[in-house]
Image 1 (spheres, one colour):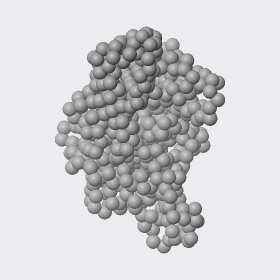
Image 2 (image 1 turned 180 degrees about the vertical axis):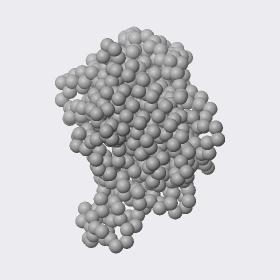
Image 3 (image 1 turned 45 degrees about the vertical axis):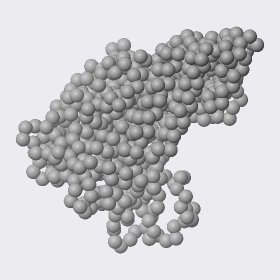
Length: 597
């Protein structure tokens, strides 16, 4: 199985060639290259092969194009359609492998056309990953995309005088890069970006096209995305080590015997990115990219998975759903956000949690009213350019009216009828402190600092420090201490030390007499447990850091955590100073034991 390269295209003028335009076989044109052969001379079997191939090709295109019309939300509506599409592509792929010679000689099948089919299969797997959050489908997409490159399916495209074919090749590169980014294959990403850059240069020189600026923007975006991590881990020879921050075996402190925590499971997450001028690539801001990985497990043994390249069996689902389902919303309008939120809420299984992650620009209230309710503190920005509201451009008529393009805390109230876990990373995150738990269901909001020291603020384009702490506490800690690189051995020792710190934080939370029960109700889920522990670590570290002087520079939560038991615990402070000493940055932190002398 896998993608077979087959024979190179043959040009045989004595044969009858069945021509077609692009990949569309609906109208076959039979042209006799020499007068020697007529249609009747072609063996019936070979003619049937071409007809069957054309049927499969048309059917696959039709189904693939129909994917665009499927609703983006809701788990059930799309699955059977995806299954049918996969089936047809499986048949098409096997068919062209088995009949390559006939299709070469009678049909003029070109290698880039085989590449197109492989690319579509890669896209199917990628979209299947987006809809299921199963990282194993990313590996399948990768195996198809890498085979296209290894077998140079698109190599001949540059010799054809057809700009639209070159654009197919450029789009393939962009899609391949996204999959590699998500699989943390950073070395390969750099190679692909270099190749894409050369392809774009060649394309713009040969065809005087209007989309040159767009393609150059793609290059700039991906270059900035690769450079976004503020700290790199180095091998002894100073080469960069790729570190994965997905959930790994042993990275979550286990629950102790007798620990009483809730049995809730994180089932659905909305990851929303609407921060102005943050690094992005392909509708993923760097904050969204980090948070989605914090909500996924490390794919199991890549080696065994990629060896079964392109078996294309999306039905072989892993027995238990490993990762919570996610919706990734880049700059959604209020109505889009609300639609996805409602769909998630509606389909949330029993004993499950909905997580809402908001990384967005703050919207502040303009006027003050006597009564301060859930719509009086502003919130975070929703996008306006796709929402056409009557008189949208008209300024608010009076100060009492609320911001329309804003997700207010009150907008989330209806959804607190089920367990809700909210993370807000915004300059107005504290608006969400003014929550009321109306229905008595578990509810927690983790809120970012709203003010950062200048040195941190200057880095904000490369992603928020708060999200960085939730994604990789050691990366964030090193970054806030001004380190640009850490040697691998030291990094691994520090990570090992942090595992011990996480265990202690877990015990602080579960043994506290005064902690709000909501925190413990979420503590049974591994993803949420790790997020809570990292949140406490972040809060404690920033409180001790000398640059963070104002209370607005510390994260907050709703309900509030008991500070003495958690973020201001003397044991945790001791741990943080130990970590700082390990990294040789202890002078940046307040040390009470020293200050006393």
